[in-house]
Every structure is written in structure tokens, then in C-alpha cells.
Length: 459
Image (cartoon, rainbow, N blue to C red):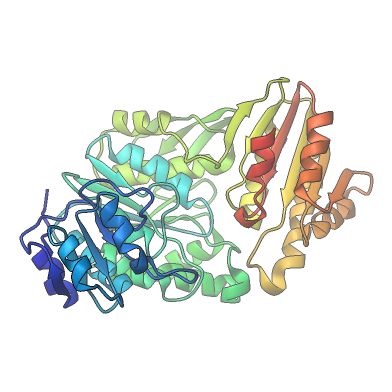
């Protein structure tokens, strides 16, 4: 383990030590007083709604060994009371977090695999990390802690790890630039360029530009891309002689390609062909998009020189982060597909196509609004509806301000489709609770802010 001491934090942040021992080793960091563990160092992050620095006493009382805070006043009595604890004043706690994490990363000469893309980041991270851990002790992003707070806190969990797999999310230009310059990846992955956040960034071309910021933090750019994505393929053709790019795909000629694909509702099998050999791959999650995720993991495995048997094992045994294609059987025998964490047109399309391949008697799509689409919102919601109709989904239930356009799109293709719009998601829950039966397969999907996971919880 590479140690960070209080004196390192002081030097990095130009902080002031109010109380405590500058040689104290800071092993674990936390930003939440509710989950603080004995010995943690608490960082008081200032958010939009509250200032974490104001909770420094709760952090110390709950077991923190020290706190890093900004803009607080400490009375002589408080200083005396907490004299055996460590209190560090900094100008800006968020900037301090960045600097400490960047320093921690600099102590490790290990493979760092960074993943970004419009959709599929978290599920790709899950399967890639499971392959990487077959060779290295691996730290990975938990859940979707992929922002300017979650990523540095993930890096600060490095101990005796031999590799790290991290996810990078963004809404605006400059966000991935910040993250990659903290994480300093040795290998980057771009899963696809879709329409997520297009309302903010204005075009898919701008989304590509924002995702490519991931290369800025790399000393020697080495990137893996989905070569079947139109914009990534175009970028590859323009840059393949300039930087090291590894490709995977099903349609376009790529370094590693999936062939002889066999899809089923609970998984898939395919042959990964890298022109030198064929590797038989079994994926434990259904859907063509998981073939792409697995192909990406194979590519990572080959780049990191992981043995084929370990690549196969890592993919076959990986588990998804919850709320992403979480499939379970209800008490009445119906199948519930909880894919409620987030939604874009591309992920909606993939989930609808997966639902269509299921062997259930009735296929029911419960869909809600997709956020951050701006002027493209009506068009993309209608396109989702068209996918529902094209894939012959039996029942379409929607709630949300823009979900009426999903139904419009579905009826454009099939005017007789069984589709219903509800004012509130609770009305959908009531209808499903009373009408679903054994043999039904229900897909629940919307942007996270719609809280459609509550439908799944009540079912």
C-alpha cells in the first residue's frame, strides 16, 4: 500500500493543520458522516444544497480520525475537545479532493482502464473488471460513481491493487478532461456515441468531442472503440495511423469480431475472432448489446495479455450492477426486467429488442421519459415508440411528460397497438398489480429521475 500522510495533504493543498499529527497515515476517505467508519478522513464537500464542512463535528463524533474542511470557525473549546483528532483547513475541499486523488494515483504504476460512452459504461465496466481481475487484484468503480466526486473517491480506495477499472460520466464539455487528468488512464474505452445529453451538447459530433477528452490524461494514448458505431468508426478511419486504436465489432471489419452469435433470453454465445485464433465466449446476460460489452472485455483481455481461459471465465462469471437488466421472477410467475436506472434512445432500443426476443406469452414495455434531450426530445421519444411497434411488443404502458410521444410513435407504425398513457407511475403499478399473470415479461425503463425503480419495488 502506498501511504498518504497528513503532511502530504498539507503540501498538496497548501492547507493549514489546526490540530493533529502530520505523520498520521490517511488510509480511508469519506464524504458522508452517515457512513463514516472509525479511522476515516472526512472531506467536507460543498454541494448545491448543503456544505459538508459544516458537519465536521458529526464526522469526528462518529469515528473519523480527521477532517478536511473549508470556511468553518472552530472555537478554542472545540479545538481543545478534538485536540487528539486531525483538523485540516483548505481553501476549497473539492479542489483538495482532486489533488489528493491525483497524488494517490501517481503512486501506482499499474494498468488503469477508463471507460466512457453514451450508453453501456457501467455494464461494460462490470464485465471488463471481471476479466481484468483474473490476472490482477482489481479496484473498480462501484455503482455509477463516475463523476467529479465519485471518481477521485474511488482512486483513494487504492491499497494493494494491481489494476483499476474506472467509469467516467459527463454532461458537459470539460468534465471528462478533469476526470482523465486525475485518473491518468493507461488504456481508454469508448463504448459508443449516442444521444445521451444531446440537449446539452447540441449534436452527436459534440458528444464525440466531449468523450474524446478522455485521451487528454494519457501519456501514450491507447484506446479501444466500438467500431460499429458510425461516429467512432469514422474517427477511427481518420486517426488509425496517428495513435494506437484497438477495435471490436460485429459488422465493420475490426481487430476482434463476434461471429456465430447465438442469442437467448438469458444469455448468448459467440466466437471472438481476432484473425489469429477463435475464442468461444459465453455471456450470462441476454441482449445483443451485451455481446458488444463482452467483445470489449475480450479486447481488453488481449491488450493486457490475459490468457484466453481467464477471459472466458471472467465474462462467464461477471455480475451486473443492480438496476441494470436486473431480471427476476415475481410471485405470480411473471418475469420482471428492471432496467430503470437510466435511459437514452440507444439503451431503450437495446432493451426493447431484448424484450422482443423473450419467450414470454405477453411482452409488456413500461416506459417513461428520457431526460436531457433538448430540442431532440420529441423526435427521440417517437423513435422509441416506433421501436416498440417494430418489435411487436404486446402492451405499452407509459407515464411522463414526454411519454405521449412514445405512444404517438408506436401508433404511427401500428395504430392498433395496445398502448396506454398514465398521469402518474403509481397508476401503472396498480394496473400491473391487478392484471399481470404468469407468462408475462415486463420491461421497466426510464431516466433515473422518473423513479421507475419504485414500480419494480412495489411489484
